[in-house]
Image 1 (cartoon, rainbow, N blue to C red):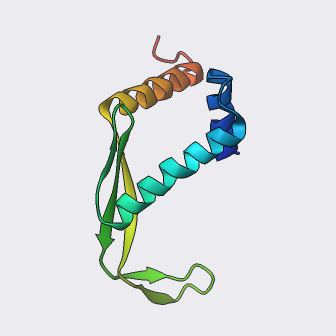
Image 2 (image 1 turned 180 degrees about the horizontal axis):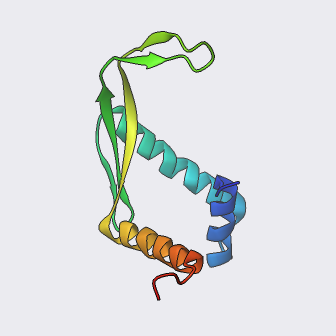
Length: 109
């Protein structure tokens, strides 16, 4: 499983006990509504040291139905993309490098 809104609300409550979990959920709902509104209006949402959410227009394209193997046309649509900040990318790459080091059998030594 992944991180849920309830998990984030609990973390906010743990960081500041004056904020109840219900207040934290309400705060998150407000934040997410603001993000959704901006994206629906075609605006970028930039969160410092985290990343940028942006709506992109996807052109129609040929696809394959995995159940039948037959072709189908995927209609044009809008999709939300996320681009991590350089700081986030660095953190992710550090984690990946540490995981790779744990898997290293030492063959190159």
